[in-house]
Length: 130
Image 1 (tube, one colour):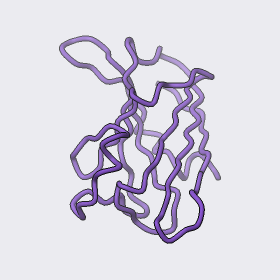
Image 2 (tube, rainbow, N blue to C red; image 1 turned 120 degrees about the horizontal axis):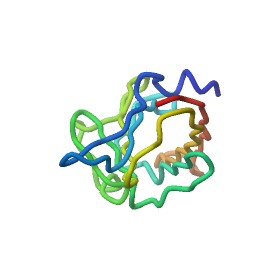
Image 3 (tube, one colour; image 1 turned 45 degrees about the vertical axis):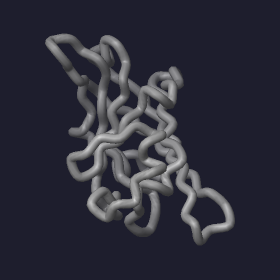
Image 4 (cartoon, rainbow, N blue to C red; image 1 turned 90 degrees about the vertical axis):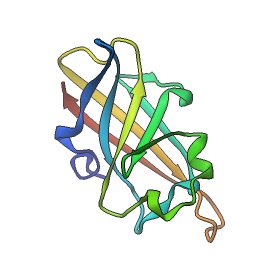
């Protein structure tokens, strides 16, 4: 799929906490034909410039609430649905964030709808600049 349809080009940025850069984030669309409860998300695997990010360093924000990837498995509330066509924010904990300049991101989205006999994966890539 075309990267510009999945990632918001204006959504890439470094994240600061207490005056120091502690990671980066990006705005990302669900690659499924309908909205989902977060509990069917099995993974959002992030690789940036060839570096695989540990799963425990990936956070997902939907409707103003942030969850780690273990927590999303338990979120069944309709308040935190990831709707079709809406961007969620993915935050990656990475000391120092990303250097200014061009980067390449690859995100593997892995979901497991209960009515499907197999999980669904979508591999999404884009080049961007910070």
